[in-house]
Length: 323
View 1: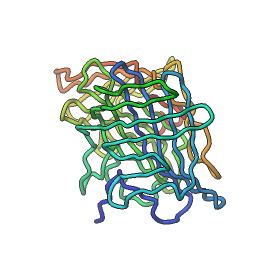
View 2: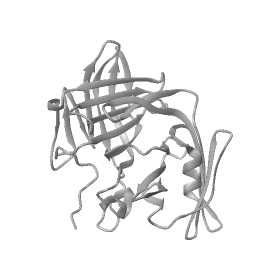
View 3: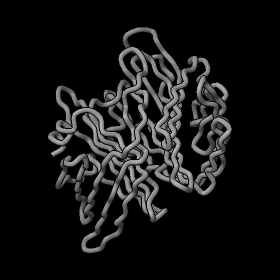
């Protein structure tokens, strides 16, 4: 069976519709966060296609979307090494050099000690065996749960230092985003060895649909997984007072999550029928708390108010299809 690593570019063919984007989240030592997303889009309705770069500043909520000609998008076939105009992206390095009418960005950030979600023949990254199903609407990959950052960016003459910061990398590719989802991620906890990534989404499946979930908790070198495909069980899930309360069980592990949006958000661009449009509200000051118990022993009991949080579409449908 052919094993293709999630970080690689999957859009070598001219199939439509198609999108692919790599999500780089970078937090300074003080918790301030920048998100940058390079990607490519091809419409399934007409011949429109574009490469793009998104740059999201958590401190202000400002999102800048920079379109590029697809000829400016050059990605290596055997590794994630992407040249987009004057910008370069890989797992270990980001080099930015772009500007528009309101922002100018220049600088380089390097990443060390990456912690990817393992990719094996029987667990194709965070999607498990679903990653082998060619008809999936959207594929998801977690390329690094947590890593150390160094370097700096200059944004409109303001230098942002990322030395001793933390990073996270994931990606999505396929035909379209799900119609409903909850997603949250943070590696800004009091315990710096912890990183969490949480997603719950409506998944079309033949003539039906279900709510699939992927939860990874990195604790040092240990990755705890709660997913649809490894038969983790939801014991409670409800949205009340704008907070998602979600409890799961796998073997002798019990996980309790609480997720809620923050106060400042930015509107990210996402694939639509004929173009990329601004439609995904993302908070970088959201809240996530987690308690992980193994039997009678509490392994983790932490919370963060610097979490990335997205709640999109109909949560009532998500919750109904999850239980």
